[in-house]
Amino acid sequence: MNPSKHPDAVLEFEDYVRARQVGLLRSARRLVDDPLDAQDLLQTALLRTYRQWERIADKRVADAYLRRVMINTRTEWWRAKKLRELPSEHLPDTSIDDSTEQHADRALLLDILNVLAPKQRSVVVLRHLEQMTTDETATALGMSAGTVKSTLHRALARLRQELESHNPDSVSASATGRVCATDGTEG
Image (cartoon, rainbow, N blue to C red; front, side, top):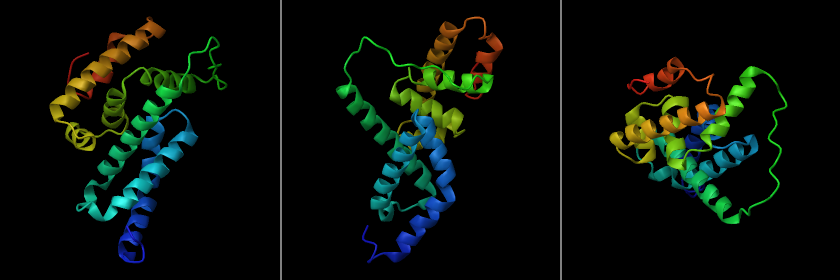
């Protein structure tokens, strides 16, 4: 988009970013582990969306478009990182500085989300953490509602399995049932 030719579109985009900045950063933070990476992800996605802003005919779907751009960008980064990674005999220190239970639970959840494939993680983040409907998630990810449901089902099963392997005594049937209750299935 050429700002000198389309000043109204520039102002419209700036207003959109100001209004949605906090929510979009929260979405980015849920897609990547590091807060600085989340800021980079959002900035990259905003730049890519800005370039296409005039082509988004219905601005009501701008959030879905931008989330799709964030997911695609995160997937590109993930693939590039996989190509650069070399096996190491030394594992990095993953200790948690803050010993509060809530922080530990959040760290565990983020670690466990990392075991999911990018598509599964995107579905879980949008459906449960962003609390989007199945149809909204399908639109944002460019897939059918049925694919969202089946991907979510498999992802939640994998998350349950990972939680149980971390601490089998702490995962009860009611806890896994609560996770599934939002997608309409029994735990």
